[in-house]
Length: 541
Image (cartoon, rainbow, N blue to C red; front, side, top):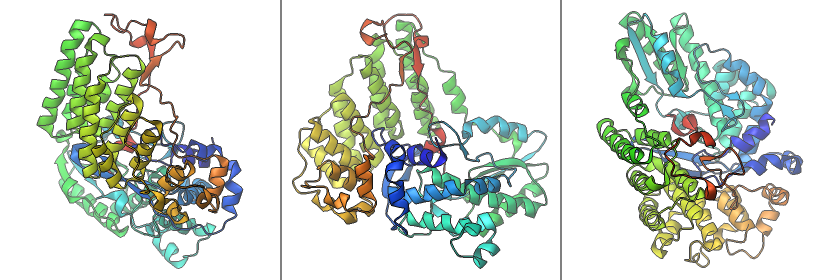
C-alpha cells in the first residue's frame, strides 16, 4: 500500500480506541473522493476530539481524534515530501527512533524502547558516567513554527515564510496548525504524522548537540530520551549544558525531574520485568490453578513495591499467551476483573481476553461482568475517563451486557463523541435497553458540527439517523463529508469482527470438539496475536 493510503488507514486513529473505530475505508475509497477534495482549495481549520486514556503509574494521556479533513491534507503533504524528510533524518547518527514506513500495527514502525536496553549497556561499556535526560512534555509543547526551522534552519525559514516547495517545512507547519484550529502549540498525540514531525525537530536538536560538543557523543536518543556516556563527570555536565541549550533553542525544555548524571554501574532496567518473565503457568490443570494464584499475587506484590501500574498490564499481557484450562477459568476471570478495578490501563487487554475466551465457549460470568461494567463505567464517566468507558462499552457489545438507566445517564453527561456513539450502537442493537434521551443529539445534525470536536458523532451518528435527524442533507451538502458518505467511508463499523488473541491454526477445528481441559500443552495448536502496541501506547511523549 502506498504511503499516503497507509497513513490514512493505519496511521490516523489512536491505537487506544476500541477496534470498531477504523479508517480502512478512508484509504480504500480514496479514488472515489480524492479528486473532489483536492479541487476544493484551501481547506478549513478543524477541531479534534480529546480522548483521555490511562497511562502508566496512574497518570492520564490526552490523545487526539483528528478531523479527517485536516488529517488528509497533512498526511498528503508529508507523503509528498517524504524523501526530503528521510534525508533530514539521515543527518542524525544519534537517533534510534527514526520512523520507517513498513507493514505492522501502524503505518510507521519505530523500535520498541524495551529492545534498546542492551544497546544502552553496550554503549556504556568502558565509560564511568551516564547522562540521562529527556524533553518535558515533548509532543504537547512543540511549537509548530519550529518544524521549518528544523528542516531548513531557523535563518532560512525566517527569511522565507511562503508555503512553497523549496521551504516545504512551512507547508507542514500550516497543516499542523490546521488540525488544531490554527493553534501553534503542540502536536496531537495519536496519529503517526505527529511522530514523523516530532522526529524532524529531534534530529535538528541532535545536530546542534553534536556541533556544540565538537563530535558525536557515545550513546543515543530515543524520541525525546537522551542516553550519553562519558569517562569524566565534567564531560557529562558539559553535554547536559549542550542538550539544554539545543532543546531551548527549539522552544522546548529539559525535564529536570528526569535528568541525572549517574555512574554506569547504576544502569539497570526495571527489575520487575525480569521478575515477571520468570513467572510461569503450568499446562497441567491442577498445577495451573495454583500457578494462577501465585502469578497474580506476585503481580500485586510487585506493584505495591514499585508503585508502577504498567507492570500489572505487562503481566496481564504476558499471561494472555497462556491458554487457561476451562476448569480454571473462574479463578482466572476473577483475577482479571480485580485487575480491571484496580489498574485502569489493563482494561483494554482484559477486554480482549474476555472476548477471546467467550469466542472459544468458556463460561464467562456475565453477572460479574455486568457488575464490573456498570460500577466502573459510572465511576469513570464521572471523571471523564474516556478510554475506560469506551473499552467497557466494547465489552458490553461483545458479551451482550446491559447497562442501568443511571449508568446510561452518566455516559450521556460525559459529552464524549466516542462513548456516545458506542452507547447509541448498543441502544439501537437492543443490547442496552434504556433508550436515547429524546432530542438530546439533534444539535449535532448540523454542518458546523462536522468541523467541530464532535465531527465523529455528527458524521457517524448522522448518516445512521441516530441523532434524531430526518435526513442526511447536512452531510450530503458538505464539500468534504458529502463525497465521503457517497463513497461509503466510515470511521465506525458496528459489525466489525475482531480476531481473538488466539485462534485455531486449522480452520476446521472448533471450540465444540476441542478439549480445552486437557493436561497437555495446547498452545501449539493456535496462532497468537501479540497485541504489540508498546511504542504507540506507552511512550512518554
